[in-house]
Image (cartoon, rainbow over the protein chains, first blue to last red):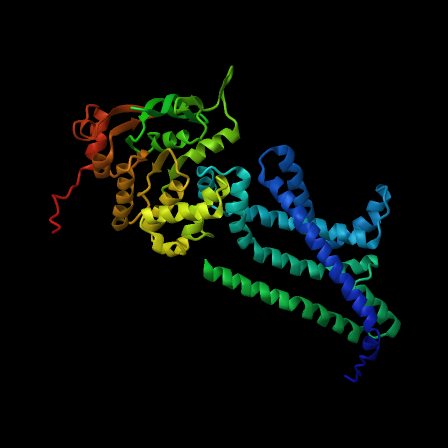
Amino acid sequence: MGYQFDFSAVIGNWKLLLIGLQNSIILGATCLVLGLSLGLIVGGMRYMRAPIVNWPATAFVEVFRNTPVLVQIMWFFFAFPIISPVEINAFTAASLGLTLNTAAFSAEIFRAGIRSVEKGQWEAGKAIGMTYIQQLRRIVLPQAIRRMLPAFMNRAVELMKMTSLASVIAYGELMHKAKQISTLEFNPIEMYTVVALIFFALIFPLALFVQRFELKLKDSG
Amino acid sequence: MTEILRLRNLHKSFGPLEVLKGIDLAVAQGEVIVLIGASGSGKSTLLRCINFMEIPTSGRVFLHGTPVGRQTSSGVSYVERELTQIRARIGMVFQHFNLFPHMTALQNVMEGPRTVLKCSPDECRNRADNQLRKVGLEWKADAYPSQLSGGQQQRVAIARALAMEPEIMLFDEVTSALDPELVGEVLITMKELADEGMTMLIVTHELGFAYSVADRVLFLADGNVLEQGSPPEVLTYPKEEATKNFLRGHSSFRLPEPQLD
């Protein structure tokens, strides 16, 4: 193998990569915040028994869990604008796809987390005169969220990886910048290796932290 | 005698299953009532209807002579806010303790005064300290439930209910989940409470405890009060055949008086 590695073009374009990384993080963070918030609402709707709230929430969750994110992003970018009255740029389309996907998964995490708290906990709160909201806020959620945290952190890791899919609709995140650079400089090996390393450096500590945290939870019961 | 609680023709059904079939009961201030009966006889459901953990299907509950809920043409309607206030005035202790695992013993006891009664931090702390001392667990104030024995957990649960300064205390098989050697400490705590004049309704299988603490024993069978009276009347000289059978089952094997000196 006589290939000569040459990282000079990668290093020379560091500003472009930095912008890409920044955009990746902005996209990931936006979708995480929006996705979790929406997920809480959808999870709450899934928790209720009334069909009029339960069914739409269930349909939402199933559609977004059982279709590829790449398809969702492409759909929001290429198909949705045709039927939508508003302009949709690459960031909006990517955000929509990733946010709704994250919401669908985290709705299930919320629902399962709340369900995992024993009925006796609700009852004990009720018996000392707490309202439903007080039972939820003071008794159930503090216990449920502890159990949900590892799952949410895993979602964040997944989401960060999925931001790279936004490159297919030319959103200027890290992967897209890398593609541009490698086309101009003919250095796909160096370029994509570096992109992989950047993602790894960003995500591995997060994943490690999740593992540690899960162990700690297990220890404390 | 001052009447504190009255149940009038109380019915409760779960779907097609009628669990309570018209219970009438008047409870005097400071009275200690023990409910006995086979499982499925409706004892726990009766207790849970008193503080509206379950909503009665029909019939009425009176607290200090005031009916709970509003009579309408289609039955009694209840507003959740009123029920919440009623629950705050009636303490309940459960078979499985149900302490809040993310709070210390002290925080468990402070939770009601804090969140429901909106007491000042000092007042909450005061009440919690007093109640923990009363159940003999002030030295475990900073322990989490997982660090306490079953008997200690149940005593904290009693303190948690008492911190609300309830008018009535309901005990739902509170020693059934405990190892035999831990039952005594909980029963002693309850006995002390009874001696202080607390109005108590107790569902239990501890007939010896019932005999020595109850002012009145009710035998429930199939959703009705089949027999009631003083402990000797019901537990020693039962009249009904069902009561006799129940007591026979409970006293098939007995120790002669153990010599414990």
